[in-house]
Image 1: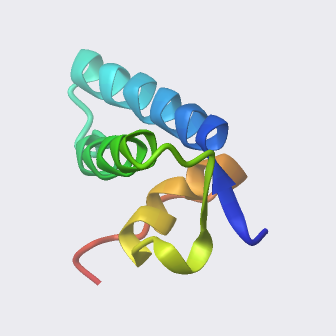
Image 2: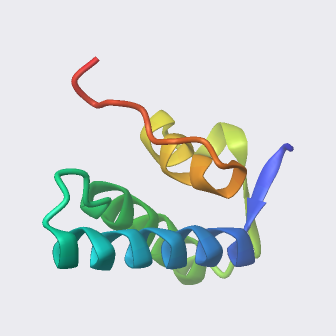
Amino acid sequence: MRSFTLAQIERALHHWRKHHGRARLYHDSVDGARELRLLSALYGRLVEQRLGAIDIDQISSAEFSALGCLFGVPPADPEI
């Protein structure tokens, strides 16, 4: 995969919103709030620039990690 489409970022946002909501409901320690903020900013950037996709080399490693949910990959621990 060389780029992420707007639709893929929307799916990732949906995932993290659902995860964040579940974490608040069950008082889970991992809430996805950081990933939600990162992807919201990325989505906003694409909409503002009227782009339908973004190349993988144009996103940060943290944004890439947050998009890992599209592939069933858990986010990296920011403390490591």
